[in-house]
Image (tube, rainbow, N blue to C red; front, side, top):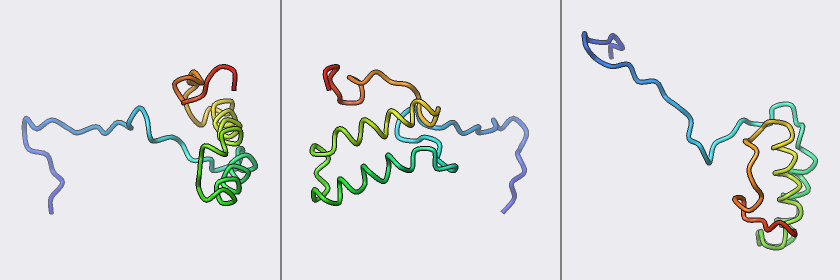
Length: 82
């Protein structure tokens, strides 16, 4: 299969989605909080409502280390008093 472009064909430049995709934590910066969250899920039959504190800690770590965009907690499903 040829990858040559024909005259006048526009080149496709992929862009990542705004939500649902984020850089992997290759250096393990947030591994401790991720592991804590995953253990909580395992111990609670994957009921994420019982692991909200751990989830918030993990997301906070990711935001602080530029592994995801900084978002308002309300947009991530957390109330200000949580």
